Length: 346
Image (tube, rainbow, N blue to C red; front, side):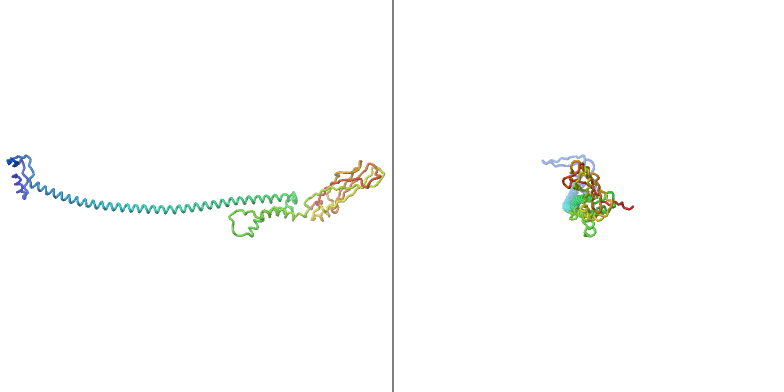
């Protein structure tokens, strides 16, 4: 037992400071000897060490308790972190799933709207293309039949029209007939057609379009069929030259021939033509079948009361003493102007 330790123990309750300087220790060896040892540095007394041990135990217990508390707290924190992590993961997954569902629903609605809009647009485009194609076909057919109607009017203007007289009644009537047969169906449709508006800008050809060329021709024939459409009428009249027997050489025989022009004049113009005076007429010899030496001279032509009067002389070179009463035949070609020779008053 160290004396200083004893003093320290005894003075522990008095809070005496530990001894300073060298200390003497008595140690009992295993063989029973007692040995004194001098220690230069002072050693801590047993009370101090016990106190330190107790303090260390207290600190260890406190640390253990703190460690236990911290471990419990860490476990609770771990469990809370795990629970919170799971809750956050679940919430995040739910939010992500909800966002995906909303995005999918939104994109589905948008895709449905876009698809519907594209489908409607394509449908309108296809419908418009069909309408345009059908309109082009209708326009082509209408143009073809309108050209046929116009072409049918060309011979009518040539036959019944009056050249150089635009305001002539015949020209105006032919023009009006052409316009009626060209656009008459459109006018009738506009006046008496249904109020339902067609999607096509042009009406398709119908029975009117197909009958328009024939109707135009028949209309002109109905209006002008009985009128004198040919101003000049022509013909060739064969005249048998009659003679009387004579012994005088170089005798002249006067020939007469009348031609009825009524069959060649239109009925509406016939009565007026018979009243014309000084009708312009030209006649000439076309061919002769007379004896040798005979010739035709002094041919003349005139029109009176709708009849053509032809006159000419046949001169023979030799006397006619025997034979038939006719020398032969003479073909007289003639042309008559059927227009009124009297100029209209100015």
